[in-house]
Image 1: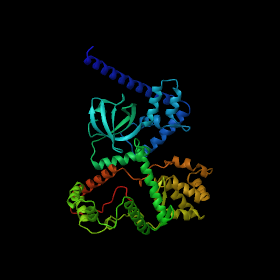
Image 2: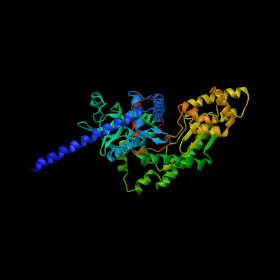
Image 3: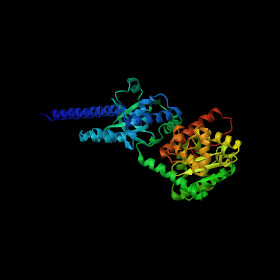
Length: 465
């Protein structure tokens, strides 16, 4: 037999083997799906509870254009927990008599994740995609439930929200429904990333645990700096005074970060550029990438002010600055919360007259609806005012038998997470920060063209406090 024939036969066997592996993976996944949907025990109860939680979140965060039920089921297959055990582990035990390859395949499914992808390349029925949240790339194939109409839109540049599910060691499939968002400019892409965070708060860096760990570390560091500066993890100040203190706090944080990076904040940008051996022309040329912001960079290059002096001021929103009293809660996992009426609530909780009772009930009803009042804040209230809070919630909920042991149940029923999700103060990867800044520049530039004669607005960073 000739060498060419041997190579052709080997290639055909390889393709056949890969096809068999894909078919096996598809069959085994269908078996997992049937195992979950046909269950009548604790698995069924866990699926119902998980789906209800997800559907409630997606209704509140306006997830549309996709089958929410199908998505919830697909996520439960790899994320679901039943009495402290994962659905995949329970399924693996159920097929313990199967081959080691099948067992390994089921174990690999724990790597499935949600992402916001951009299509980079199309080769036949394979799509090269990049997860915008982590910049990691994958080759993926559609599953048999995706329509030809959907797939025809998966051309380079298309943004799609979906799940990737490992099918073979080097091949992934689109799992669950596809949410096609179109070819988005930077401003709309930044909005899409914000929506993704609201829809899937536990999947923000689903394929990059190292980024997630770094983000959580930044929240812990923020909490540490806050406590060191203010001497406590909770403060109450008039809005205007808090604004001043927050500026001072942000300034100290900046100085610490610059020092940790080995940058002397007492020097001007011009001095630092010269010390680095760069020419002002090089920096100015790079600044052109910032569009109209290049003028600000040139101003800094020609200024002898220190970096500390030229950094833009940080201001609280107007409603907080004007508030009579603002209470700030900071936690190493829950992040921070700014509440304007918490001081008034504590005063009312300590009073027993009828007007105070009505005021307490009104604020607590509002707190049950506001996202800013998270489970940590509620548990702080329960610890500080156990009896008044118990009595107030008995009235608000019309549950005379309510006890503080029931608080988590009430919070979950109000749509509040009992576990912290990555808060807004967490650091973000550099590529996302760059995207947000460029998106803001595009919006500012567009606004400037529409209002060329209007007064320019002060600019601030994304998520900055």
